[in-house]
Amino acid sequence: MLKMGGSLAGVTVVPRPDKLYRNLLDNPRQIIAFRDFVKLIEAYGWRCVRTKGSHRSYAHDGCPELLVIQPKGSDAKSYQVLKQFLAYVEEYGLKPKP
Image (tube, rainbow, N blue to C red; front, side):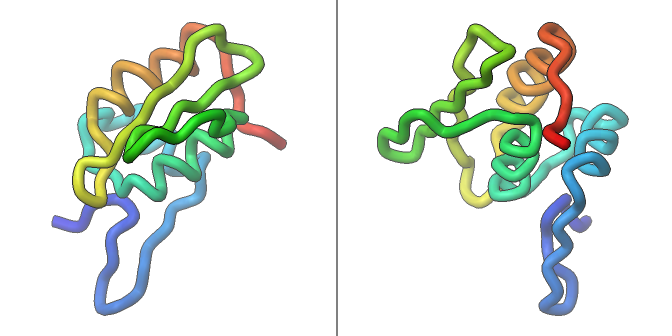
């Protein structure tokens, strides 16, 4: 099974943020690479405001809550993708930056 952002025969597959977002909506429990998750949230206008150890705190002008993320190995933690990022996008109507 190839996870999103994985590599195949030495070629790294990095999906575009819009495609990754659609894939997450279709299957929110899929495993995605942490670096791809960071690219996705930054494409949606989140900016890193604090790093402490492996925890990164992101803020967004359109969301009053911080998004705190931390990798699990080289992957994003699924609850941070599903219960935080996707929920914030829906609740606050966040859109990717043009």
